[in-house]
Length: 204
Image (tube, rainbow, N blue to C red; front, side):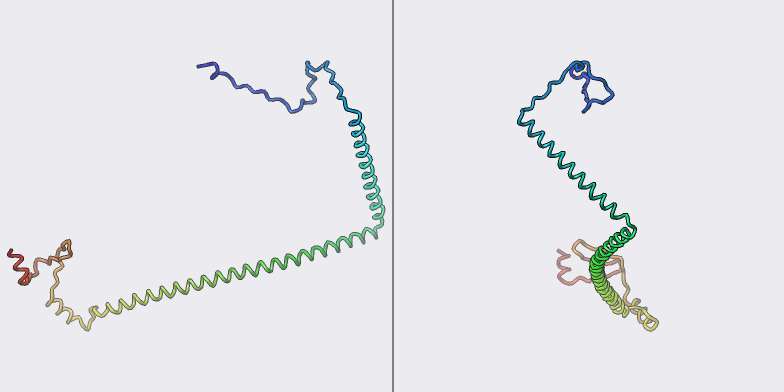
């Protein structure tokens, strides 16, 4: 086995930034970083931008301080605080009522659409059930009609004597066999009557 296959995969993971508690590396103890040299015109432009930024931030800070201080001083009076609270509450109530009216309209519209959809679904179900009931009733009527037609051959106390006489005079032998083409060989007690053509074909 070659040394390449047995070599260990070693990977060094370095910190993104050196932790504060770790000392300076030995290779950088006596290193003096080179001071960057910025051109004069670029240095003046950077100073101008920095001064403008400081001036704007200072102005914004003073404006916000004055604004909040005057609001705080103006709200010291309990009567003014109560009026401000009532006005704010009135505004919130009006806004809430407006939202409630909008939601009421949307809710009523949704409920009406949902109700119409459910009614349409119920009507379709009722129609399907009625069609199914009619089909079932027609099927039942067909079965009853067939049973009535077949009941004409039933044996009843009125025609039992005639049925017995008919059965004795016309015995039925169920001992028969069928050919592939549908021909029937009756039972052993049946008498075969061949016509003249069948007799000639049998003799040949």
